[in-house]
Amino acid sequence: MFDSILVPIAREGRPFIAAFAVATIVLGFIAEWLLVPGGILTAWCVLFFRDPDRVTPTRDGLVVSPADGLVVSVATVPWPKELAMGEGEATRIGIFMNVFDVHVNRTPVDGKVVKLAYVPGAFFNASFDKASEHNERQLVAMETRDGRQLAFVQIAGLVARRIVCKITEGQTLLAGERMGMIRFGSRVDVYLPAGVSPLVVEGQRCVAGETVVADLQSAEPPRRGGVR
Image 1: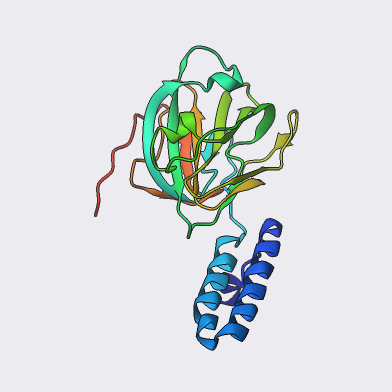
Image 2: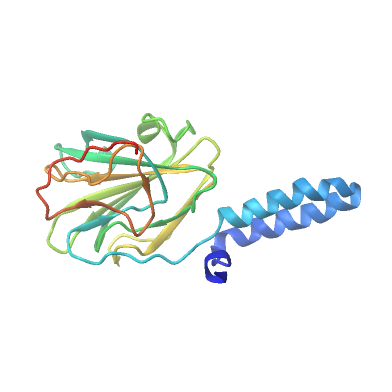
């Protein structure tokens, strides 16, 4: 039970948690009732930066979700031009993280990082599709062990002002590895090769490093979903 409550905290969050805690103490000296909102905000900050371990499926071809959150978009679009991955089309899965989701991002596949591209931009609500093209974002192109290409993009949101990306070009990664995070509330897009159908649908919630969003070896048609 305690393992599910006392989860690890991301290193990037420790200065913020300390700042919130100090601010709460200072507010308490000003007026005791301010300890209540200060304590709530400090608890939320701890919740935001939690970094639980995940159990990642490890079969070749599986693409796992890079983020906790809600699938807000599944669309056929061109590959991001910043990554120079060709003129063809890809299937983009947009996963929106609200301020209560875990914000540590994870690698979607086993493979090699072939290109990184950072694009400064605006800070529209990350649940909108225009965020994929206009918001500040960090793009990552990967190549799997069998030569398939795939991309994912960390996108800043309305409140988010900081994208953390800890990987480098040429680095080999395993699916489910921690690769960075976004502060505070944001989105991650996954770009699948043409012909690969997503295994998630709009409105479905994903768990980073655990939810399988696609299978590069499958010929399954696109799925449909319904609220039960």
